[in-house]
Length: 314
Image (cartoon, rainbow, N blue to C red):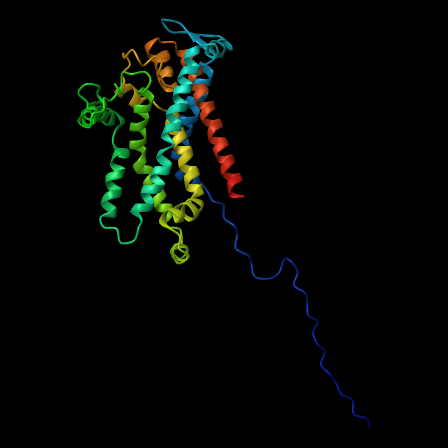
């Protein structure tokens, strides 16, 4: 009798289908909370930034009467603006002021590198003192510097006379007015630039400077060959900020020189040109065209600076 081995049938394994398995948690929608938190900010940006720009663009194609009422003028304001010699004079003054204001960046890099030296005492106090002009009101800065830059009784000319130098009439000589205002502008923005550069300097590894010292590199060589290349993005950022601030020159010029000074006409900035057209002569359509030109010029210069920064970083 032969032995027969009976094997129990092995149950077939079933491949789990897509519908089987543990239930997946449902993906909940984000709901309205992002709109609740972002809504006030977005509304403020639209109402106080984008809408005024669009409204001003519309005004630039109109002509306002003496007693109000706007009529469509087409491109007349822009054609008149491009033919106005005051536009090119104010644009040249603004470019000169902006170019001189850019000197604040190398000064900030040099002074920040000095303040970041290890072991420097009262470094925090020095940073606060340098930052104070930036947080002060432009009107207060202008009043103080009027006393410094006065022609006959100014503090600066008084100090120059002590050493036998006759200083110019800084605020009434047409050849030096923009230079004098630019000096005040550099002084007022220098503290902000130093704080930004100081934050960037702390990201540079100390080992790089230690290796440079072992190779015999001087402090100036370390500044030129290590510090500046490492903080190029920060320098580019400051360049954008200084250019935008330079093209918004109005407060310092208004307080230092004054709207009634005989030298203001050949030394006005673009924003002062806008103020004079819109608020002194009440030519609102023409002033809106000037404002749109300032907006376009700042946008183009900012784009060029960012494009040059991207090419530098490649």
